[in-house]
Image (cartoon, rainbow over all chains, first blue to last red; front, side):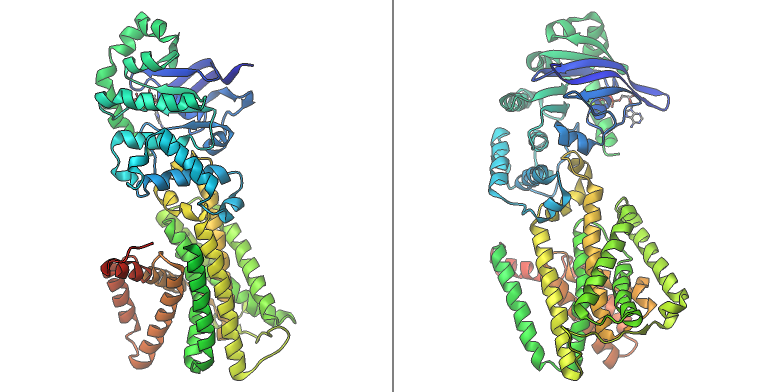
Length: 268
Length: 316
Ligand SMILES: Nc1ncnc2c1ncn2[C@@H]1O[C@H](COP(=O)(O)OP(=O)(O)OP(=O)(O)O)[C@@H](O)[C@H]1O
Ligand SMILES: [Mg+2]
């Protein structure tokens, strides 16, 4: 089978709220997919189910022909699916250097807890891998800054750089450009997509900015009310009249409100 | 840098070992206890770095101590090394079992659950006649490499014996601190979710820390039992656990050496206070704790760092 990721009849309910329903799709290797949808459409829920943060109520997820439905997130990460977060999840009191070093070291020893207890944190190959990531995401200038003090965009890049340790084959980005100013958005996205392309990573990114979606997605999944209402190349999906009225029209207002909600929601 | 630290540590242990020859008896017995207790503190430092403070670490301390006492009472075994290894194994296994539950909790729940477990042991010890009940019982003298020792020689050899275990523990912990797992203390404290999404289980990481800390506490208890030659249920009581937490705050999580120095100062101040100003011990304890928290929140270990900064020396 050519798909790296296959989703069949995925559903998630929170009490009476149906956050995802009847999601079925295949993701070919190295495709870049943009996920769009209004606030509360179920985009994050979808990402959370794929990455094991939420257990689907129904349906199945296959990664490289292996059923990963319901596995804990750390197991899914180890298999090769990584993610970044709507609100960057980095270690705030550590420097950028230390954040990346920790991530690299964890990825190299995560197969065995005992190994990780006797393997020194710093080693030549680990440092090389960390440097490569720092260069790829242009984090060099900030290496000694504590993550808590970083500008929003840089913190997001750090978050993504950390997600890329251990060379995942699939990466899910939950609103990589949220909280970044309009002027910087394209530059940040360009950096991310170039880095991922150089590593041949299959990427699914949630994005509210339609210009960015049109530019960086080969394929668009439009979410509404927990399900996919359009799936196709950006020219086609974004032009869909339902998508136009339900999603594109509501985006600008929704972005800010959604971020506030999620800044609080994701911590739980 | 790391090699320099190891070298300095080895040198410090060698100096203390030689100095023991001229130490007065009271100071040597005090130092023996202080060193044994420092092992518990060393374990607490491991947990504290990750933001976890167990208020029941005496559980493992008492387990180690009673292991030695019971082996002496009910078997013909007398070998000190064997005693300590048995205590380490038993407390390590107990820490594994307790950790299955404890590693899932954080913050105050972690602290209180740990306290609860230690109080269960306390209750069992108090209620069980064969375990000596409230009075506890005498610990048989151990033999060292086949020979029973007496008087000053016995004291000196026991001191060296305890010191050797401390050196070993310091080495193991320093290797651990430099390891991947050991360096994840701040990440565990700050962002568990990121660690999970890097592919490791935070609960298992904490479980490992609990086993290391529990084993260290068990060894400390075993050595203390050999030094005091008596065990009783207060070794499992919450005030004993509290004392260890006190010394941990005094020492700070910054350095391994601080655990030993802090533990020694604690015993010294306590014995001086009890001798010279009876009834003032609690006041002194409270005042010292207050001053430490107010003026030296990083603990004794941070004196070196603070001093370096004052003198304009760059901290490595
Ligand atoms: N943990 C939860 N408990 C209850 N309801 C939830 C939970 N997570 C999400 N929901 C609900 O599920 C629906 C989908 O939410 P989701 O976070 O997936 O939306 P989203 O498309 O990511 O929105 P946004 O653009 O605001 O990030 C919403 O109605 C939300 O309120
Ligand atoms: Mg979302």
